[in-house]
Length: 212
Image (cartoon, rainbow, N blue to C red):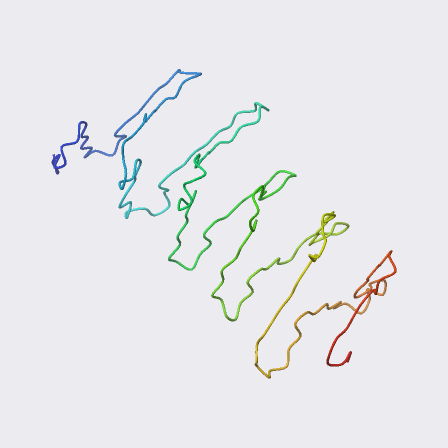
């Protein structure tokens, strides 16, 4: 063997050949194939794959299912089950390279990402340090009869708003805080901005500066 069991592990496998270290052929149907029951780890990691530094086109983890069953289920589940564990983050992804942190490929006619925010908190918060690139970008949307950005049925509003944009920059550089640009001269049926108010209040209010 090229290495030795130096940490008093109960089971030590030293695989020097190009073959699986562990292979499990399980016929279990209603119980787990692998179970780590009630680990007592406190500051250590319960399950760890470390120093996979030889990877080229391989992956650290691959999970696959081809079941046609229509029962509701999650292929992966991480559950922080104690409301007092306020310091626990359910999942952290850290990317040190100039590449996507997360890629979601949705090939079905459903949501790519669905957020069910039941607590009184922000459903999506972005802390961006980018300076010359877009913080939120929807490139080349193929939407034809749909709506690219939709905020609908906000019927609980009292003193809140549907949208709020704020800037306190002291820069004197010419810019538009909000721009709507119809960039094709042939699209004569387009209205740049439409405001419909079914009540008696003002349809639009402009304060300060000029209307251009």
